[in-house]
Length: 178
Image 1: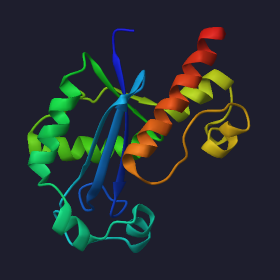
Image 2 (image 1 turned 90 degrees about the vertical axis):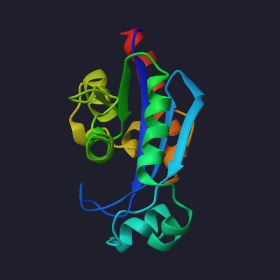
Image 3 (image 1 turned 120 degrees about the vertical axis):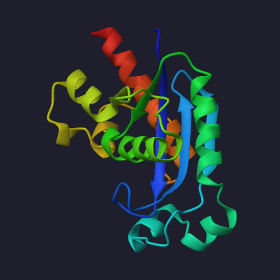
């Protein structure tokens, strides 16, 4: 393939793009899961949703004390992305993670290294097409009944990006057999 498929996962302090923080970003190249990126970011706001911070196990004070400056962190992520030719953002589901990441890149960096309109591939939709099923049939729980892949969803952004990459790789194998 001529594109670099990059599995990206984020953990956030809430659900609203532009109002809530990205707590961490994890990424890996889908055909080389040892090629990874991970960073925790300082918050731009003290606002948070308790359920979200409970899930990612990071609170605002932890991120203030230990997080990386947003611009510096995004620049590091951009540099890592740009090491790969024609990067494509791969997510599960794409809409949540990509919306946050795209907004952060535009707000803090002026451009998104995945492209002006962000090249993206949604694993749920990919699975829906492969299995000719409804989108609601493509939850990880339901997909695990059909196929097997390595990894467990832990709400650590890097671990989850690797799990997504493994799922995407298995789906690609199935598509090649059809």
